[in-house]
Length: 343
Image (cartoon, rainbow, N blue to C red; front, side, top):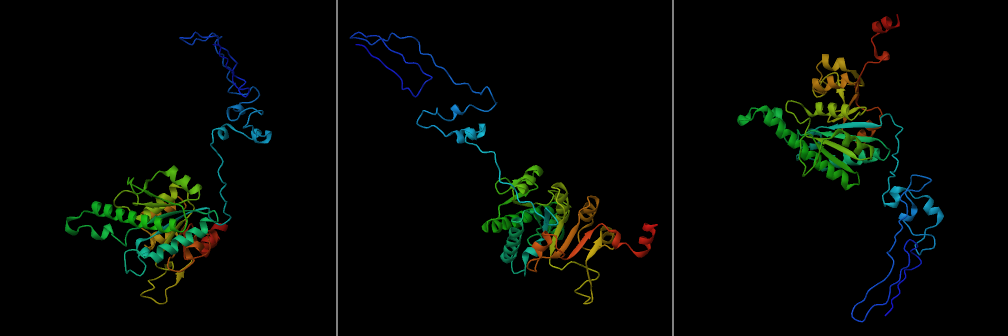
């Protein structure tokens, strides 16, 4: 019998072929070899992919309109979009900040290790400023759970081991704060100084910066990853690494006073301080390693009260709050130094 086969006209690349008659016991075909013509991968006029790879011809049942095909790119043909939503640029004083939250501040009224009201207040104020385009990184302490320097020497516990336990405490605080922030819709990542892959990302500088650029809040935990260094030093170090513009130190006091306000009711809150005044007067603002690192990298430090509502957002947006520590400007020089500078 004779068998004639032809392909649909919608496949112009394939040629019609026919077969010869077959015997009653077997079916044999006598036809020229099938010739397939593949469309070129690249168009002769441009380096873009040929639209026929992603759609059929105009006469086919799935033809696209000319406007749609003209907007096709190689990535759109593959179903991949390379476009990102543009970040909202902030017009405030600082674009990228590092917030240092001490463990004692997280304890609140000290009825427990962590006060959920404090973490929720931090999360809400951070959320309000990230919507404005300000990039926020956070370093948390662990003194509300375990302070290595205080436990060193107890029951044979050496300082290094005690500090490592304190680093684990900061990870606990970071995970708690991350859960609180994400519960109100703030995308947050925790990065630790040593690997804890099951609960957090390892600290990678470029990845941390990319998270910030995408509008995510990054919480740095485990300090610097080395004993004998405080979380204040970790805050100064991370601030310099990610090119943040300021360290915001949230504490339980309004700022830096010229005397102990608990002992002297006439103690005066200082609006500004120089790095030299902090180191020469041995003010207990930050440890000397942290303040020296800030001075060498010209990083200002703002010390403010975490307990007052709105202080976090004010500090992040660069409004006047607490005490500002930085380089002494011309207007802050003593009178005799001003005269010499003018001469």
